[in-house]
Image (tube, rainbow, N blue to C red; front, side, top):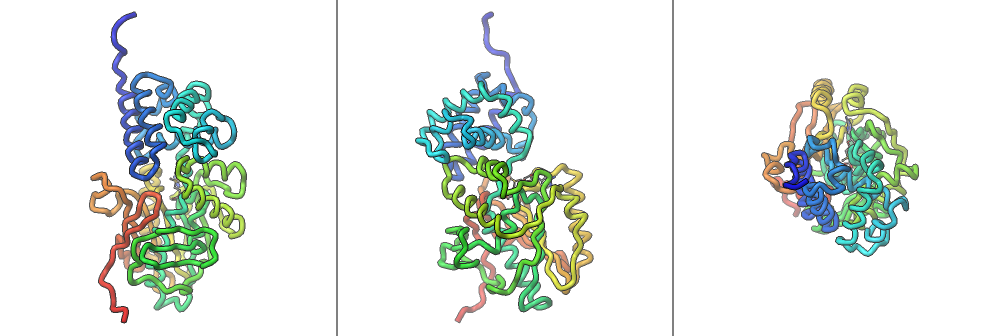
Length: 378
Ligand SMILES: C[S@@+](CC[C@H](N)C(=O)[O-])C[C@H]1O[C@@H](n2cnc3c(N)ncnc32)[C@H](O)[C@@H]1O
């Protein structure tokens, strides 16, 4: 047979997805993953083994994060000793970090471990990114400040998280945050420390000691048990293999999760919120980060409607706050213009007052808080 390969429009779409994620990885400090995804895009275009692994996913929307599912599945093989050739080149497994050699090993895996890799494409990434607590905690402190007049001096907080993965961000009050301006929040002795959490602390946050988390409840259709070996492996696999600072904070949070009780429910967004009611004498906070893009449209609408419904029942003595860190929401289109950074938004009820209070990196740290007018400090 002679002639050129038949044009494969599906391969073009897959290669676009891979290249888009490669750019994001480069921007977010992962040159290794940027290289692997760029080479995978070329391989797909050339009809190589990456094309067969990704077959059937040609129409996946960008929000489904197919490239991260793929690299997560391969990382899992390396972390669990099932892909020693690939592990030999990943920093996360003590390898040499040689990106070219890592690509050759990965390409080989596409051929030898195709079925396992394809299985890994079925579920969304379980990136339970503790760094996002730097953004979520700012929303919490803003909401607590608003609840203090009615519920202070120590506001009881009921923390509920939609799409919680392993629920690590439900421990956000137990982490230590250090801002680039020298500010610090959270318990001094915490083993989970987020360095460079934000540029400068804004005015208007609640004072230390002015709230206490009395309830931690998370829901996720693919909820992860952080205390199990399988759950910990899953979480580790979605941390990019050349980002040891993220691995370190994940490991510290996993250890903390063994000591702090969290109720983890295997349930989607709409069902979790349907079962939630406000309670007199406590601030109910619903938080979510990098979840909304995974909700089917009908579930997203049901979740939004339920939050409005709950908000309508809120009173100063039984308030509700929604804190979210989601791409493209209320940022004036910045995210769609390709500007890196997700808005941090707080909505409080009664009233349904919504504010974008800052912009965070996709993995949370650092956050740039919107500095409102500052009261005099003298
Ligand atoms: C990228 S992870 C983010 C996890 C966590 N919120 C964080 O920021 O670390 C996306 C999460 O959304 C969850 N998810 C997917 N579909 C969902 C649904 N219908 N309802 C609630 N969560 C969902 C996934 O299981 C996964 O845990």
